[in-house]
Length: 140
Image (cartoon, rainbow, N blue to C red; front, side, top):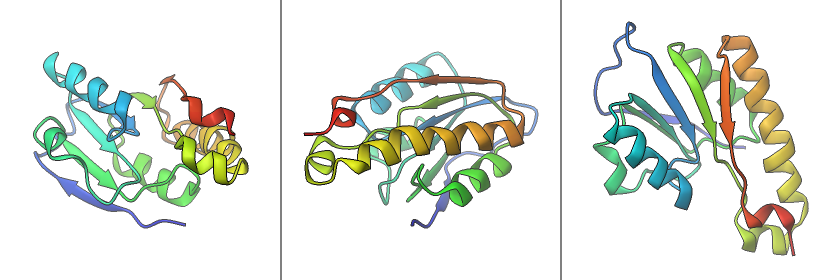
């Protein structure tokens, strides 16, 4: 379903714990990354877009692009690579236009995507998740 490219912006020291933000390039994600960065968090930013917005690049420790929560192997690989994450923020949500054209996208992203995230977290022994959703999940 997707490919994943990792773009390190700063080195990720194994002794430092990080926060992983899925949907970092979205409307809520951009604000969350800015707030987490301002309080000194080390951030692994994950998004399905081919690149993060320019405004986020200096705020993250590591960026993973072209990553879709519907693809378990990609999500699992991200969690295995970033073992020093203490909290995951799952902000993955379908766009309203996507669900208007294909209502099953809402279920694929919100239900199956969350299942993929939770399973990968379980396997990586990451203990804490925070999440939100969007109007796009309600479909047309």
